[in-house]
Structure formats: structure tokens, C-alpha cells
Length: 201
Image (cartoon, rainbow, N blue to C red; front, side):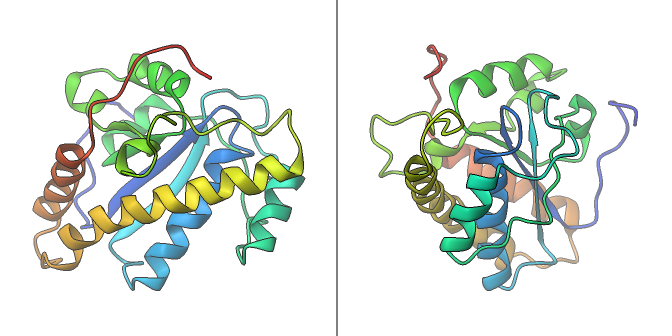
């Protein structure tokens, strides 16, 4: 799709979660945020997807340890298939949520302009309880126990993200779709603290 084409104006606020391979952290974040959206009754106003910065796992299911951790916490990650983030998606996305600073640098480098770069936020930036933990750790080379810990961190951060996103969409009539999406995006960007560009964990 052309990167400079007009964005969608159907009143749906589009969020894409991004990690490295789209098989561990970002699928967790996608599933968790989507469930919050479903429980909040905003399925028709918020669409959640995920992708990776790399193409190593395109077409694959999430890591088995990701699926197991999700299942233990009451989520179903089996429908997921890994994708690589496409910079052309910026035209349709309102928010790109990255899991650590390495993803932040890569995705911002792919952005064609400041407007697109402003859509990129660290997941931890929405969570006032994250403290010094800026990056969500990558559990890929670790134990199943770390997958559970990472999921708990993602759940907390996604709850904080949804708490900021929900009012802007719930209380704005869907008859003004472009304004709704823009207002929600602006509210989220204003609420999120400036992010660091230090070395990834």
C-alpha cells in the first residue's frame, strides 16, 4: 500500500504491539490488550494487532512457552501468526507500542515523518508502576518462569494503557471517527512520559 495514502477514517483506533520476532512479548501484549478491549465493550472502537522488527518467524505460531503462559492466565494465543512490521502500516495505525528501546529505535527509524514517529511509544511509558524498568525483558533465551513474569508485567502495563485509552473513545460519539481516533491518539501521547533512547536490555 502507498505510504502517503489517506489514513482510514472508520472510527476504529488501531494499535500495533511490536517486539523482535513477534512470538513472545508482542503476542502476549496483543492478546492481553484485546481481551481488555473485549471486556470493556469497545471491540468496535479499538483494533489490536502485533508484529516483529525481524522476519525470522513470519508465519509461525507464538513460542510454545508464550502459549502456555497465556493459557495459565486464561488467554488463548493459538490463532496468532507472526508478522514483520511494515512501515506502510503507519498510515493506518494510531499507536505503535514497542516492548523495549531497541524496538523503539528501529521503528522510529522506519517512520517517514515526525507524525509517524510520534505514534511510537514504549509500553512501560503508560505504566506509572514500571519505575526504572523501561524495557520489558525478552524471555526467549530464558526459563518458562520468566515468561510468566513478563506476562504479569505486560498485563499491568496494558491495563494502564487501556485505562488511558478508554475514556477518549468511550465518551466520543463514533459518528465523528477521524476526530475520535485523533483525540485518543493525542491523549495517549500527552499522557505518556518521554522515552529514553539508551541501550537495549
